[in-house]
Length: 362
Ligand SMILES: Cc1ncc(C[n+]2csc(CCOP(=O)(O)OP(=O)(O)O)c2C)c(N)n1
Ligand SMILES: [Mg+2]
Image (tube, protein in one colour):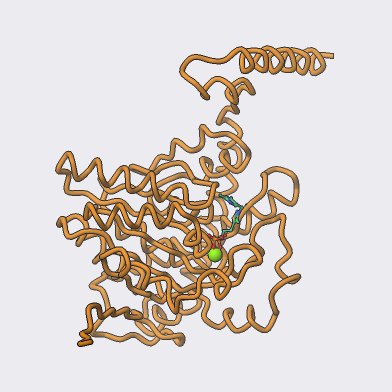
C-alpha cells in the first residue's frame, strides 16, 4: 500500500536571555530603560508581596495561600496585554493580576475570604479560578463572544501543567481551534501539580505540541526569562487580535515553593532538584541583564524595595475596609428561584448570624 506523510509537526523552544543573563540581541524586544526597570520592579514587587502573604497565612490572617515564588516572570504576560483584552487567571497568578492593575488589598481581601476583592481594579480580569481548568472554558466563551461581535481584542487564559489532564482543557482547545477564536492558552508548566511530577501528567514530549492536535500552533518559552515571555505572549495576542486564531504557550518554569501553605514539598521532591532550579531564578537573571546594561544599581533596588514594603503595609489596613460577605450568600446565588431546602438553610444561617452578634455583644 502506498504511504505518504499526512502530518508534520513543529514545536520550538524560545528564549532571549540565557541563564547567565546574556542576551540574544537579535531577539531582544525594543524596551526603553524605564520599561526594563518597570518589568524588574513588577517582579520584585510580586516576590515581596508573596513573602508577606505566606507570613500572613502563618499568623492566621490569610487563608491557604499559593505562592508564585520562581514564577515571577509571569508578570511579563500581563504587560504584553492591551487594555481591552481579557485576563482569565488561575490560583497562582498574583503576579499577572497585579501587573494588570489590581491592588494588593484586593488580593488580600480574596485571600481572607471576601469575594468583593475579586472586583479587581485592573481592566477585564475575571475572578481567580480555584477548580482546576474550569476557567479555560470561560475564556473560550469570552473569545467566542469577541469573535461574534467582531471585537479586535484577545483573551489570555492562564493555567498549570496539571490542568492539561482535565477534560475542560481539551474541550476548550478543540472549540478554540474549530472556531479560530482570539485566545492565548498560557500554560505555566512549573513541573509539578501538587505531588504529581510533569512526567506523570502526560506521555507527550511537550505540552506545547498538544495544540497541533487541535489545529493551531504551540510554542515553548523559557518561563524564567521575562523578555522571552513578553515576546511570545505579545506575538500570540497580536495574532489572535488579527483573527488568526489561538496559540498555546508552554511556559517552562518551576514552582520553588510548596504547592500551598498546606503542603510540604520535601515529602515528594528532592532538594537537589529545587537547588538546580534556584540557579535559573528569573529575578537574578534579569538583574544580571540590567546590570550589564548599566541600568541596575543596588541603591536603586533598595529604594524600590522600601517603597514596595511601605505600600504592602498600607494595603493591609485598606484590605480590612473591604467588607466580608453575609453567610447567606452561599445559598442566595444558586438558583434564580430558591428551593425549599435552600430557604431552610438560609433561615439556619440567618439565625446563626444573629446568635453570633448576640454573643459578640455580651
Ligand atoms: C477540579 C479540581 N480538582 C482538583 C483540585 C485540587 N487541586 C488544587 S491545585 C491542584 C494541582 C494543580 O496543578 P497545576 O495545574 O500544575 O498548577 P500549579 O498548582 O502547579 O500551579 C489540584 C489537583 C482542584 N482545585 N480542582
Ligand atoms: Mg504545575
